[in-house]
Image (cartoon, rainbow over all chains, first blue to last red; front, top):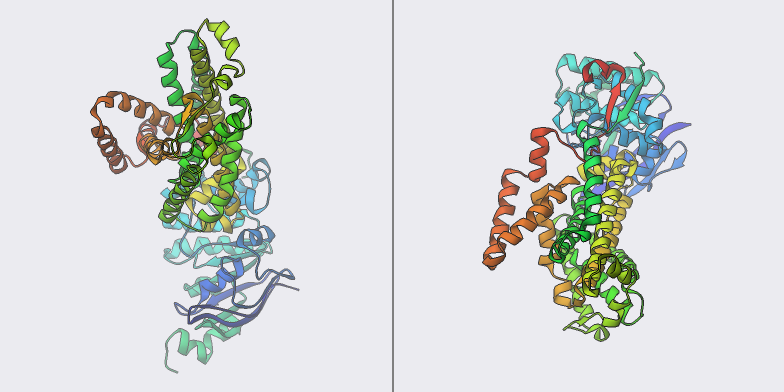
Length: 239
Length: 353
């Protein structure tokens, strides 16, 4: 049974169709990459999966249950974790407290129960030295890591990463990719939107290409990248 | 690598603060034994304004709900108390609870409408609702309509504990009533601060801070943001209603214009929180003391007084946006009511010492 399945999902803002009849399935344990030009509707697709938006038509199933109209906080409890494209830390809370909110509320546990888990997430994401610093004082890389760490603290079964490697130096990007690879190796299903293609293709098993809200290709990353449509539409190359 | 961690909120100053707080409360309880009646009345004013300020701070500073309509809960609470005493024949002290419950009940429809609005619109919305409540209460003939009314003398004379206080301090009935009101105000202020401090240190308090910082992200990590807003809104309404009832019990005279005054019950309260430091428990305590001093210093200057308050408010917002307590806390690292959870032990042992 797939962890996630979208069935003819559509979403419009006014007359602009941002998600156009999208259907795909993600098997448990897979890492799926999503690419597409700016404005293709990638982040909207994420917001539909996390429940920050409700689609106009179609159904979304998570672990076999219809979650189309289930609100974001409920889906988080069920196991959908996400990072935001523009990091959205709780500025005035410390890094540790950011994780504590996610771990206590995202899993309905007490602070004492999740404290050690938060410490482990801080260790593996390299944020331990900043544990007691206010999140508002972090650098861009640290903010990106906090996005990942906070999503991990909710103990997700499905992890959605939105352009987490964007804006990082090559070295920073490499170490972040390593962390993501480790998380994936533990069996967490990942859907990852990314413009930094070499980072993405080094982790994901399948690629989905989105353009004008439509799925124009899904499959093996190498084949997808060489397909005529992707070269034309996504890379803007005349073939 | 896997070492044991623990969490602490204690700071060096917080243990001393607990001692100081216990001492000040003890002195305040004993105050009627040695302080003049005027001083007790001043302290009553300070404590009730402090309670209102703490609840507004909970709403705006922690819940992100900037209400300009708190006078609705003060006024309705006060009128509920008068209604309970005059029409229901209930003891005035017991009627304070009626005041809280009435404000709580008003908060349900108010929240239902006001939560559809955000930011500045929410602020204006709550103000409009407060005006509607004021105009409606002014139609209530049996408590004096638009001109207001007084608490009946018999009810005040027969109030619980008044006899006992008269004997204890050897004072007249009216002074004994002031002492009783003062003690209730002290209990309310201490209860409010303790309650808010407890809330902020709980799991819910953490969620509340997350909602304040970023509501969308909070929902995405499983926080029920809607429930948190209702929680602080209803709690604040209940506490503000209790304070409103108590304030007008002590005044013994009420009118709609005074009980629903936006200046007295919201503008001054916002001033106290803003100059003291929004989003901290210490801020309103410092703010109310400054406000009281300014009010006494400038009492003879009429409308200049309000203009100077306004200028000070603007000055603080420009040069110390986190208020005077924010400034002190930043310079000295002082936290009297620490809520920040710090991770210690494990890999952090060497660094934190």
